Length: 299
Image 1 (cartoon, rainbow, N blue to C red):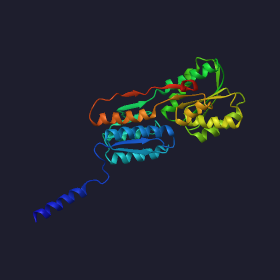
Image 2: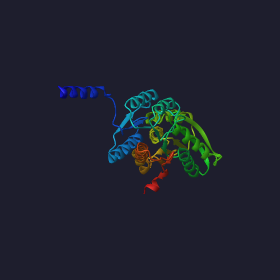
Image 3: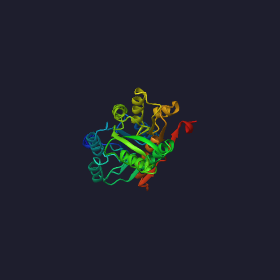
Image 4: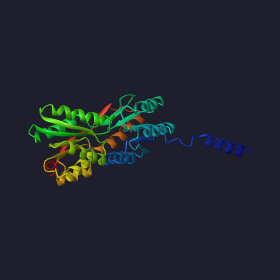
């Protein structure tokens, strides 16, 4: 009888445990979209490091939807993950969500894009302002300080779009002979980059260069420029150094791209999460180096 009672008690305890609880060391990673090679690389870097460290990793795709991202992160809170790493869809919209994570006493890491509020234990990203300045420097030198330039912006509200745009504008101040004739949003998307560039080409008869705040928009812009048969008069600079962009640089369709290291960002995010789990100190900001990639540097 005592064995039966004990067995029943064990069954009751097991049944009472929340079925959705994660392993004590599980790390959650919320990514803005996996419909972009850059963020696929970021995920891959995180997964490789998690596998190496033998720590469970849950990756979620927000599909560029701030509400979806909020809901997914709330699910991670309910599952009691140990740390949540976030690549925000929107740097403002993510703030209330981060505050909910803070209230649950779960450490937060932001990756690639920052948040405009809430308590963040660590931020891992490139210096996007410096990257924008780097792109402006390349454009300015190649144009010998004179010409008409277009900038394609990423998703409004993201720190990456804001900082890359600021850096590019600041960098162009050194070249008063260069005019920024059009600035339009294409949401970091290749198809939108093509459509937006088509419209700009119709409106602007004299364009010398295009700076796109990511490679996807740059590749879309290149298609529009080629279709308009204006590739000999316009060169394009991207940002991220994705595989498609590097191929375009190598082939001469893209003049340059600013190389980030998304796999390294993912690796560092998991590494930081492990330190937080172990109660070890973590740097508030870990910069990931950038470099300018051209056909010559690829050689």
